[in-house]
Amino acid sequence: MQKKLFKNIDFGKALDLANLVDYQPGKVISLTFVQNETVSVTLFAFAQNEGISTHSSSGDAMVYILDGKAQITIGEETQVAEKGQVIVMPSNVPHGLEANENFKMLLIVVK
Image (cartoon, rainbow, N blue to C red):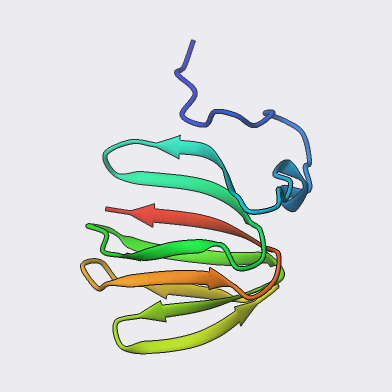
């Protein structure tokens, strides 16, 4: 039997990705699907005004916004990203985000 690389998600079912995590006041909720030395895939739900502090990653990070809006800072530039948009953060460049409202995203990091 082949080892499954994905976890915390049903195989062989069409799913609404945004509904796999719920908002919780004052919290950031995450659900990790894949985490290994070359790739990570994590689904997040941020309550309004929650965020991720500025940090750097050794891999390129792509965020797909599933719901809401967030202010995303990459290096010295800040922009608002909203539902349906995607943004890529290059490796080794400081980045962070703050949810302007309830906000869900899928984060894919490739090293």
